[in-house]
Length: 245
Image (cartoon, rainbow, N blue to C red):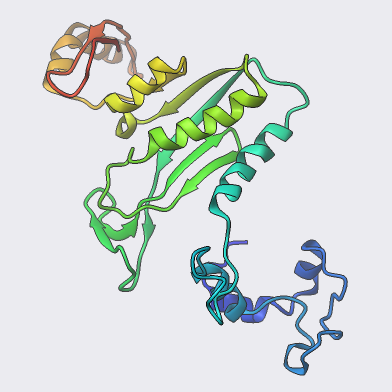
């Protein structure tokens, strides 16, 4: 609902509408066992803090942080909800990968400054298919935008193909994900990809005629112009083979 801080829930726990939405029968909290909880149908920040800080390894022996999330089950759930949203397997799906900034305003663990976003932040990885979230992975900002993408794709694509073996899968992302490891994995596993490619001098030289044609068309019509060319290309060091761009 957009509330970012746990202490917001000290007020939200009184909301009967939220209690109804999450399946509570006691919508006013008047039947709570402890007197201090009566009038509050939902959990407060202290309980939610235990969920946020609890780990499977320590939950059984920790007095206060006894609630722990099963991260693997949560990962599977996101993909299962996506699969269950279709009545029959689609012919083709697109998986969109992206990274974005999650700004930090204190001395949080794993705090790093990111030059592109010009702030201290985390750099979570997201994978969507249409409006369906398939992966949300929190990462520190000292990593490449594509870090961990192959592992997440391998997990997600495997789960999808177990249910939809004939569905064509194509990934899509900006130039931050145009990495040899991702492209090589896609090629090996019959996954299509459409990735942005960062500008460099070699590409600018190869596109010289098209850029000039676009400039002349823009001057002639007074409107934005776009020209296309495709060719085989390989970076000097970072790509393992030649690819179509």
